Length: 480
Image (cartoon, rainbow, N blue to C red; front, side, top):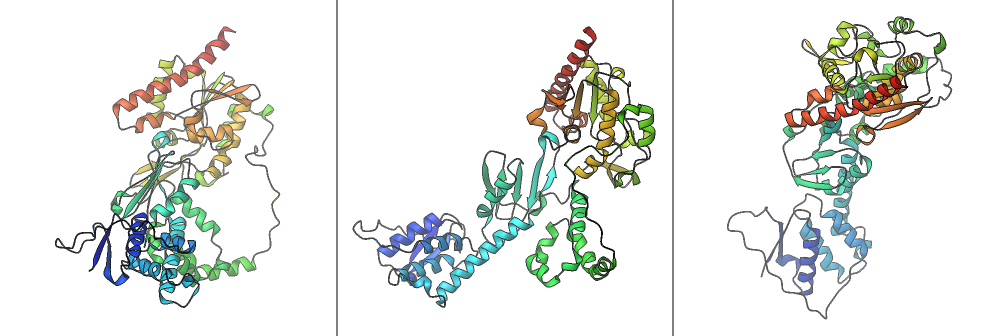
């Protein structure tokens, strides 16, 4: 009599193990068993799942631990015959405990190949998942799309949980989706590719990085295509560069060989101030004039002009934003656009006269990507922030404020010299040396991007509360 075993899912190892043990204890041969996963019934009239009685309590058998490890991985293969293959191996291991040592046995060869394929697919997922950013600030979420060959999402997901523990992310696939919220890993049913973003503001940064690390002298096209098959290219931002990089590899290699050797650069300490004039001779007017010709990074090429800071030469509070926007780029002044209007209103409600604070940005040129006649804001990357940090440092030394308010992640990175999470540091005074303190809050543009009216109102009140801390500093100094 044929026994029909229906497992709960395609990866139900525990269900397979329990059923296989009961079948073997009842001496039911592999040829008399049909395996399938729930949801894969061939038609409405398919036989019902067999009800297996408990095995005899006085009988047992053992199999090598190696088989359990193989079975746990092989069951993730997409071959519909894998359940039957594994049961056949289990059946035969009862009679030949050393069966797995016979490398030429057809069943052993087949299950070993399955394990290799699953592990290879897991490696591909680790290597070729590319997260794209959705939202900003507190609402930032990273989403990736991947199409695995086998049922490896649950196997591969813990790798991303460990590597990106401080990110909220989702990996979408056609079969099952993995999600991490910073505390718990969860899974939901599969979805379509159209649910995943196709690009984000970091695409150009990643492509620039890939082009820089591409070494034409070490190029092996066949090996590259073996390691990174073309089917993965459509999910990779750098894929658009590969054809041209490969085509120009020979010429680039010849140029590298012909070029003179360069002397190694001396190591520099991370985030140290750049060489500059003595701050004792700086004035805001001379700094503004010097910054107008800044060429420390590439952003000046597309920007209209340098947007320097604005305000009195000596104040107690210095406000640092992220970078100028479209309006600021055209006007040459910081915070004159929608975010500036939001800041002005919040400052007034917090009891701060904008004319009595110094307002500037961490990055002095507008970084954007053109979309027709519109210039869409792009977040500065770390090299761009570092290149511009000299101007913030010189403004700081010239103005000599007692409190620096960093508005947004880019501003916080510039003020502290390292990537600084907003949520963990927001609203509290932090000592930054030389008798100064810093306060971290969100950027006013974050409030403008919030789609929900209630959320916008709540966050606006929090923003005012942060600015009131700065107001307290102003009033205390005035009283003194």
